[in-house]
Image (tube, each protein chain N blue to C red):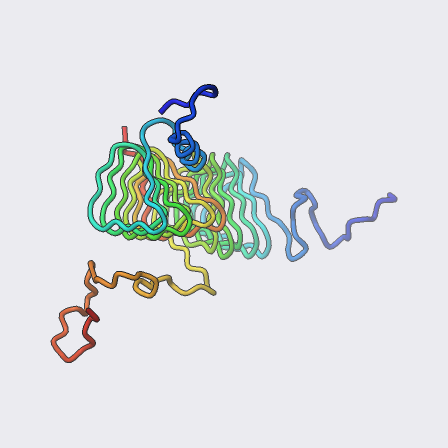
Length: 161
Length: 133
């Protein structure tokens, strides 16, 4: 054999898109996980999963997959069905064939037209403060919606005008 | 408003073309709240509405709502299609489709027929789909 391009440490090179950081695990369409799966690397699911998935890298859930599990990964792509909470530390993609029923935490979110998404969505970028600066750029300073502390009786600041 | 290529020299035509270039309404009357416009209260409107300014209250629109980039909306919105490029805080009901573009920020619960979220958009709230038969 002449071809010694791939180092022997890499057990499989079936999936071309595996980054250098880790290896990839493929759960084929007839494969099934019931329980907890931890992958240091990437995971691609085409079969059935019930339980919990924790992946350090990317998770791809193909359109043949049926996942009833909490899913956590760096990048998560959903083309199949997922019932359960999903955490994407970087990016969550729900493709047009994807169904996601469950709560979502993601730094970045992409939902394609035609996708199904039902649940609570929470996106809070770490480097970004919550945007609540209501009156700094609003010239007419009339508090139409009075803040909760409006009932103060003490010598608080009066409204100008 | 009809636009003919030949013969019409009315000054209104220039205005109409200007408006038509900016709005992408498919049929039905449309209106725009400009960047310096402010609405506080409840608006029920037949047609399409584009918001470039500030809104506090409620918007009920039979057609589509477009929240332009730079607009600030603290209101509940109800429309057929809702497109968000600006900043929205409030519940949103889109009987057909809610689209959040990359510059869009939406904080509030949404009920939609369909949902599209582009990369860069921010969405915080509870999402429900369907129920508009």
